[in-house]
Length: 259
Ligand code: FPP
Image (cartoon, rainbow, N blue to C red; front, side):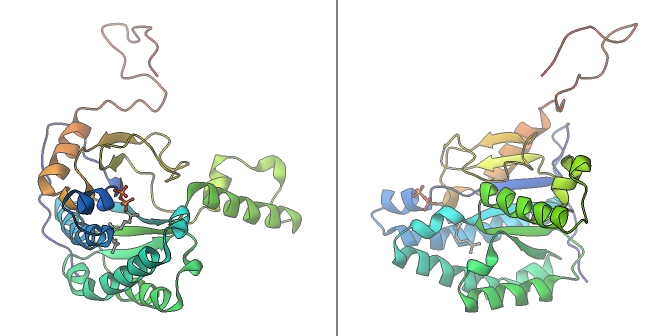
């Protein structure tokens, strides 16, 4: 069981335990250089390796990557097939790197929708890396937040009908137990690349209080320096979770309401 030597950058403020990333702009990156969109995905897979390794080395506890959404099935068949082949290749080729960095890989999403061979390879990579004690890498595959909430609700309804759950006791903690991964703490920092200011149906429940960082570069150009920029920005944030920051001045509360 391996753990990398942790070298956490210090920007004089908080460091995110869980980072979630919307990896956007592969197609635009490729098209900007006169290449077909799929070349962007291929370069994007390289960035997945670089950012995963960097996060593991920096001591990030969990990294969630939006690799394929439920909506992505609507893309041209050739692009979907390419992405599925790329995923399968990644899941095999990256095993040594994941093992070396002590990374445990898990998937969230409607993974049963994946082609059989990709799913088999995914389960095998989950198994092989399952005992690693370093960072958790969650790949969101055939993932959509609305689908996740609908799936959770089905579970809640089934258990309520079976008498296992009293509807009057349902609260936020109950709902969480029916999400794809009820255990991993919510993301602290949500990064999106390619300058887009949208959540695109990603972790809508879990990212309720995540700090957002939008990078202008497309995903294939998102490197360690870009990651450090996001971490530096996070270190300057004050997280209040809808409450108040620490009491100010003698006598405590300054009475100011903060959102
Ligand atoms: C968004 O770019 C990216 C995706 C839909 C897929 C993400 C896939 C990868 C980063 C590569 C493979 C990942 C793994 C885990 C092996 P886009 O195509 O929507 O870009 P555009 O908005 O410029 O068209």
